[in-house]
Image 1: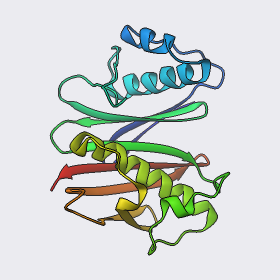
Image 2 (image 1 turned 90 degrees about the vertical axis):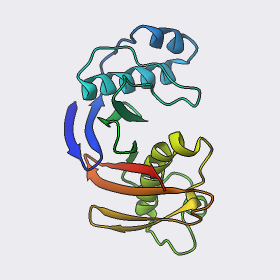
Image 3 (image 1 turned 135 degrees about the vertical axis):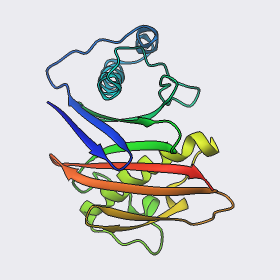
Length: 197
């Protein structure tokens, strides 16, 4: 399965490689050799989705924090979930972007206390939506702050396909963030864009 869509934060390609073995290109092969079979498959499908989103058959190395390194002029992000991967790309210059893909169902373990702030409210199923959006935000923010960003450092107000993001402590996290989401094929797809404040 392959789907492509335009999001407010860039072009997104989603691949499902249930039956398919995808190749690693160039330096990706060396990265893949250090991984177990599951992580190697995730690496391959994520890089394949990113190549399709870029429209370029190139190797995509990782930086020191594990994020993909794209060709000059591009920003991007990858997410893996099972046999699926989502890749988001956009021209550089309008901010850093992030993507996440999660099952649109209640989490298998209780995570609400780790994910939600005191003001955020969510049903069991919506907890994974909050998780997906905050993961996309983390990926967009990381190139700016280059540190671990906790789930409770931002607060979300979620509407139908909309999301307002409030940074809890702007001195600690000096960024402006926007986020978007949709439910697609039983999955939450979330994207985000971040710029320095």
